[in-house]
Length: 395
Image (cartoon, rainbow, N blue to C red; front, side, top):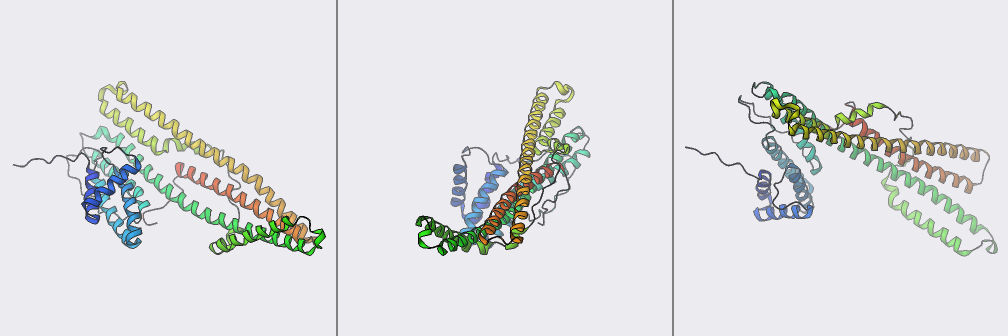
């Protein structure tokens, strides 16, 4: 006679303790978990979920990378990610086990190369589970009424995958923007150094009695020294041509109503719709009159309000950046024309250098507005369109 083993009430904590114990030892594993719980202010006895496990693994990964090297930490994380994927496929089950036999899931792809890949990996696993569950529901007469709810579940999990892909895309985009913005700062510093150097030469060329306040010359020399120090530190880190790359996103229709489509496609809204359909399935003949269904309707309405507010705030930010960009771009064009005119008229070098400095500074300010606008627009497009290029498993 056999007895069923009672399921664990904290399966993710048990798995984490066992997995970390293999690498660190039981005592150190418990210490790592307790430290993560205390540092983040989690309730001590609250069962851990997949997101909590990811946070602890990120802590351990950083510690291993510092103490044992990045190669060893990467290998451990890749193996642990695969183990976590297998756990996420089993716990929790998205629906009760169907009567028919379900083919085992394929071995998980090694998605987790680094700690920041883990949330995306988990989202993909949940999306795969939801898709398989929908197929099982459609083949089970006892579960067929759950089909609509399961369809919303698939959409919600796919939206969650897209959310993490969007985060990855935005992280890469912001890194590219930061690199170019630093190049702009370096180019502005070079223009400033030219102005300061010419200014020092001009003052030094005057007779001593005509140089004015000695503190002015000393201050100009100090600024020149500081600017050169900045260039020595940051000049080698950037590509000079990046500062001359064109400004982007100048002309774009941000009044397009298609951005409002992001509300029904928002991950939180899709999840709320799944909850509503699940509540309707559970309510049976009570239908809309069931208290759980009415609660689910309120949750859905609140999710739609919050998603709409988020989209509106992002769109308003993009419009503000666009307005500032257009104004700054005109200023940049005016300064370009002024510099060309001065050069053609044989203007003095110091005046021309000052115009070029102002041009560089205005261009750097315009770049910041351009970059922030692009980030906001790419986020909006990722919420409402499937045409945006987002990372896949292999990137």
